[in-house]
Length: 268
Image (cartoon, rainbow, N blue to C red; front, side):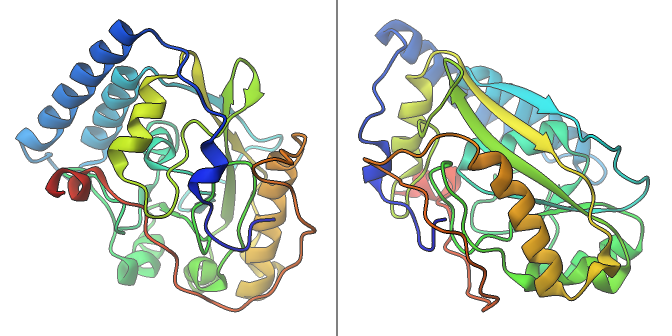
């Protein structure tokens, strides 16, 4: 288990597998898709615009999304979707596959709709699904940080199910940290690894829903955390860069570390 932010040491063994020409084409396509995303404001609540834009950006970067449905279908109606965070890539992938607006944060994409953090309970109560990322820190994708109870508390207040999604990256059917964005790392540096990876796949494992009546916010957060950990930690550990640690749960809410957004990267 990761109890703190990952570092660039987690990506030292990532080497480009795409040709220089392919990387250049992808970079141009990604730049064009970013420009198109911010050229005009979305109509309505922006959900459809967000799905289409996210799909275009992922296609430009050469990333495929593989959705693994839950063993038991999620309940109909509003739900609070919780997922682990690795980088900007899974932010986009979740938009294409999960019908829930993400909570606004520092990793927001320009021109894509979000929900303010103070509006989550109201949105759920109004019948609209919301996506939250409850980890204290983003990780490199081979481990999982603690889930903050405050992130799932709106589900208990609104009486809606909590639906976990495990985000896992694969390259040549093996776990990879190519899509990671370490704390303090620029968006462009992370993007360069993604653009240089041939056959990068982001798997979205939809896991069985958790009844909000199962316990307190801390208990529900722990259930979601352990469900996602069971998927991520099924892979063998990476002793050189990110060994698995014993999983313990301490429900002490700590503010999450932000992931640098492409909007902020462009300003640098």
